Image 1 (tube, helix red, strand yellow):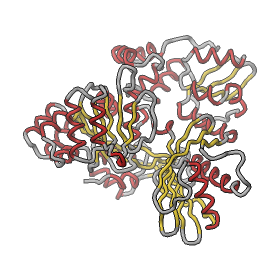
Image 2 (tube, rainbow, N blue to C red; image 1 turned 90 degrees about the horizontal axis):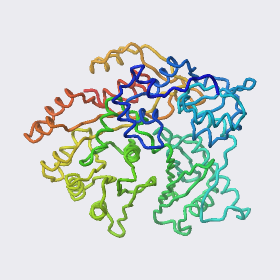
Image 3 (cartoon, helix red, strand yellow; image 1 turned 180 degrees about the vertical axis):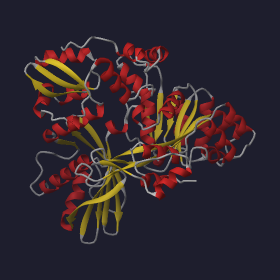
Image 4 (cartoon, helix red, strand yellow; image 1 turned 30 degrees about the vertical axis):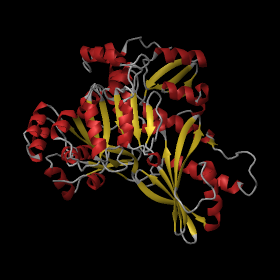
Length: 547
């Protein structure tokens, strides 16, 4: 190994005044046995990726490398293998004599450094890079070696020659969807052709047009793979397909709907690795992240997420559940449908055909000695009342609700004829969430805001000198956007807010008090993320209004 002194990360961060001794001790106490200290600090919002990089760079003199700008020797990936590199967030990038330069998310992971030296026979020179940079580079260099395996009830190896074109076509459709990072694949039958569209970053775009003659074999192949009735074409059907790509399992949820031109297929791509993120990667600002962690670590009460369909509520819920998932807790969910299966959590799927609704399932869950309950959605008075009473009797409950913003969730529950004192006593907080497209980091450029754009920021008392946009490149398919980022508004019910609600104060007065205590409205969170260069004003104004 290099001459890097074996210092402990916690001591370095405390001596650099990045964290306090108290924060270090609390994190060490709360983190799981196999969790790294740096990851635990990032997860709790005490530290940011950038702060960690800066302190290691300046305190220890470890170089920071942006991998997209570094001429990486792609052949070195084979020294350790894809799985090892992903597991340890370490990527060999340059060989010089007997020295091997390795990009690491944690260059103080001396166990990993020693192991790499033993495996390769080289002396390791660690440099620091972000986890995202490392994973993206590994994916980029290993993509050419990936193969797709489909688990299905149909035969894979001995299909007839007639079926072979359909097999090839379905595999192409799946591979393209995964390569684009699509959330859905749409197969639309028209009168004389078939349109294949992909939803990428929330927007649908036509990718290819197929001949009408290919339709019957394509639909038949998808039905076989999803274990559906191949002879039924008059009724809707739902099924699942499981893919294995480079030892990574990806589930596809298949929905088939009869239309006048034939059966329309929508395939939802469920990538567990993208859906269940550490809480520090959910795009919350630092204040909101720490408030959310405090809320979900409470032993009882209720936390609600609001927002339209496709606003990332499920991702936030699953990430929160994963954060509090311990052997010592009994976590049970009731969902419609169960999108991702999480180890250690008991998940129940709603089934209207046998009268298993949210309400009836919730009643059964309460007889299972739960500590934590997640209800997929509060849709009716019965579900709302059972969930709220559960939150008041020692359980921690999380759920989603449809409302325009965080504060209006309270009158929304009251409209369901729930007693006001129950709602006010049970509710710990509400998070309103929206998703907007993120500027492509590869082609992001700054520009001077126009007079109209400045007016929007001025109305919200935010000073702005420059903003950003994507100029378009091959990585973002010339859209200027790649990926999505979440905007948030968080309403926390403390004693002062509860007193106002008990005294039937107006929603205006409650909002005023919440903002006095630090609530950042959705529009302001969006504008601050525009100012920081994450997204554009056009994207924010699609989901939030300027008052």
